[in-house]
Image 1 (tube, helix red, strand yellow):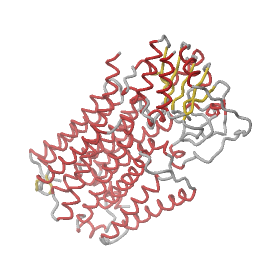
Image 2 (cartoon, helix red, strand yellow):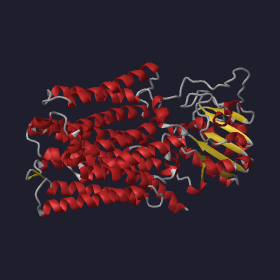
Image 3 (cartoon, chains in turn purple, green):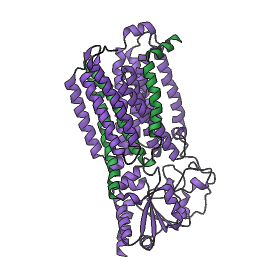
Image 4 (cartoon, one colour):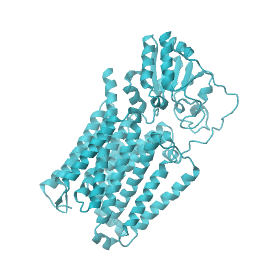
Length: 473
Length: 103
């Protein structure tokens, strides 16, 4: 503990204020009307904590040194972070969050790496390596490293740079690996003397590899849940740093994110009606629906002109967008079709599934970007209520969120997941590139439904052609 | 056993804060609508960038080239997390406000 000085007192006060701002920021972030100011409050708290740390922090009576270098690093990081965040496309937002999360994890791991040689000799002489300081350093290193490499893989998957490896082998390997990692942690803690630094590098290396193998077998569709989980991991890693430095701002900030991130992860899983364990172990892929009867299932196609006529003479149209829409960058065209139909007296609404897109709420952000008015977006329950009165449902680039198997087939992996009941409308048009399966890799019986007709092609081109056809009518 | 008890005693205040913060974190966001899941995750992501304080401390007391270099990298990465995180969240939420004013 540092002795009392006015500066230390001011520093601690700034940390309390920062913690309060973090809590209020998070609170405001969870209400639509106040969300934006909440983000600014939290940012204000962060600025305060950083500024006062540089000004007043003391360790064994010494002020923070190397200030020019610290400022240089802050400037470089700020400019790079700002540019990246401003330039990224709205569709690529989830992977950006993952990338930033990885940076935080790496930062935590690096801190532990540097602090390890500074564990006081007196402490080791008294307790060996089994002491609080060593434990927090090793935990921070392990969790930070896993979070870093895991986030990088999640980033790669969302950015379509890395494919899925779904092998049972990798899963059992993972479990063994985790046991190995924890065993090494315990082994290091039981050392009577400071072990060779090489052990620490090995430990960090294993943690990095574990992060990779942990995320690798999890499907691309589940990445939001994984990012949220890794987000809370980084929070915990930051909190271990706070423990180490007895720093209240790091402690509260880290733990807040750790616990709220965990809850958020669970909420996301709930929206998909799955458990977290189910996501991590990955029940999806490969498993077939129990009643997946093969045979005389026929798919009907619809021509562009028929689709245009059908839409033109409808009264109520519901558009169900999915990630395919985002990938094809067709959200603006979607809005164009919507305005065109509206001008012809058709009532157009959007049905948004809670997990449509790559992250919950992602689709709302994308449609808002395309200037779709807020009141046109219906939440799933409201969309389902109006379904029977809806003349046409257009499914654009969505698949699993309109799969009737979730209601009808108890053997299906998505059974019980709430879905948009497109099949209850009078007509369904599914715009899709091919008959390929969705992310959950399961058959979608909606495609074979008597009410459904397929409009094959890239969402963007089909949408353009459809707009042209409707205009010609 | 005594080691564990001593550990607890040394860190009792931190442990106290941790436990209360866990409940606080759960309480604070438990009623978030699913529309806000993404921005909330992104905002929380920026908040754990508070780890940068550790990076500043460690770099502020770095006494050799290796820790200077590692510290420098750590501060840059931490800043990326903080600044990028808050800016990205703000951009997402800007979209929400835009459609609010359209009503």
